[in-house]
Length: 305
Image (tube, rainbow, N blue to C red; front, top):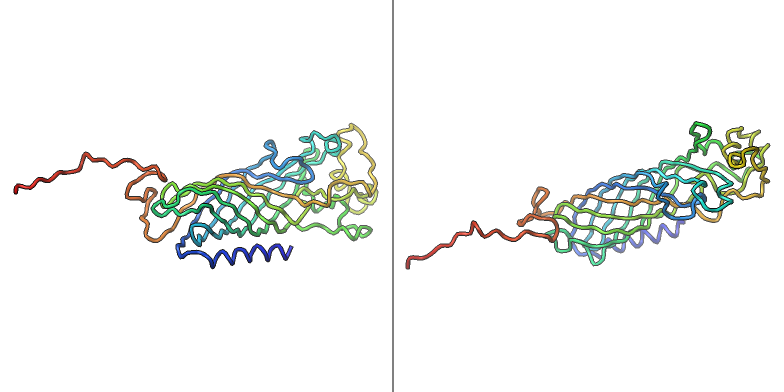
């Protein structure tokens, strides 16, 4: 993990010192949806479980190809085994919902390049990566109530007999990887569309990772609620839940979870030498679509000589 972070920041530093001196600040907002990929899904995007997401950012454009962006985003992620077509997942019958709040520092690279001043380069796709820190809090709905899952220890966390299972942290790191496209409507205002996936360093966004804990041990040390939310097969079977052993897998501990943001951005450029206002060009219009010059008011002057 440390090597990966070092490589990313080395790439950002090299980019910062290899640019031409056309620089400007940019401030914007984001709105869209959030999604999740992990132990409770089969696909990277499940439309039925997409939740709202929003955020804001400030960006330092080091040139028309590269920029460094600091962003704050918030959204909700959710998933349920009931959406699966696999019998083992339908029987497992787990579900969760969680807010996700992240602070991210990302490096954007535009090709062929983006420079809105006088609309020299008004449209460009881009890619980005960086580092993010985020907070999450998985919850599940059971018998008419919402339960916070991490304090319960549903996989036997914080039990002395299972001392290698410590409670997972609700704060962690992620590597953002994304693509997008940005259009300069004017010198001042940009409209963008982007998709970004976050590879996290945790497997517990959904509170599911390893094996089941022994029923009696879990109830004795972590309580009945921990067991009821750990093993929900009884709700599908219409009776007693399956009595899993300690070696029966509840999730896949070999792959960490992901969360994603998809949506639009609206941003304002602060470029020295541009005029104030939404339509800031001598010829008002959006992007490269400029109205033709009106010649009705042109005056013709004739000499008497």
